[in-house]
Image (cartoon, rainbow, N blue to C red):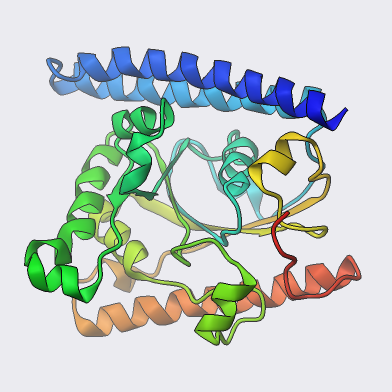
Amino acid sequence: MHFLKATLAFIAIVIATVCMCTALTWWATKLLWLKGSARSQNLQKMDKVIIGWTKANRWTFKKLNLVNVNITWHDQEQVSPENWYLVVCNHQTWTDILLLQTYLLDDLPPLKFFTKAQLIWIPFIGLAMYALGFPYVKRVNKAQIKQKPELRNADRDNVLMACERFKNHPTSILNFVEGTRYTREKHGRQNSEFKNLLRPKAGGIEYVLQGMDQHLHRLVEVTLVYPDAVPSFGYFLQGKCQRVDIDIRHHAIPDWTSTPETTERKTEIVQWVKNIWLAKDQRITQTMEQYEINPVQSEQL
């Protein structure tokens, strides 16, 4: 039964994805010669393709009973698809992205997220993310920067360029601020002060705040908890991820984030994000205790 469910889910997602990429290729090609209001309208139509893709996936999840989600929305009436948002979330599995797209769909604009440069080579998905202007980021070390100094600001420049496009119409910019998926091994290497999370990296948030200027309405914080175990994408498609707890709340963006870039401003952003992460860590522990399981998150299935 699990194998049949996974096969049907995979086929449905592939069909939806191929249709999405075909439509996006057409709209993205039109961008090459459109200007002004015509270009702006074309960009909005491209977002409608994402909405259609997400609705198709949501229908698949529901019909195949792939997941049972418990959602807690705090002050839900204060958000709207007509505004811009910065969305932050803890990250454990690629399933996170599907869940976020699906269950934020009716309340926020479509999600655009930071993605690794290597993902552009994934069939269909890479093309879609490129056409939609997702900011690509690269992991570079000090030796690479020393050899090519221009790499130092490459990620910032990519994010700022993407933000200019995002200003065209309401958008949600998703940032997994831990920079990578949580595992016990990574958590142990960091010797993190958080029980259930990796240390947040505020650089991406700083770039978005800088690039979006006054456009952002609020910061939306999502906390994902998988009480049984963190599912791989394959386990999710088999319907073995039957319990997911999603807590969604939002925060005002402090006025000082719009001040000129200084060392003091960077320090304040780092502390602001850390405080959000400390509260998130406590909520995860409380949620896991409610399910009467170890508060340290389970390994991935």
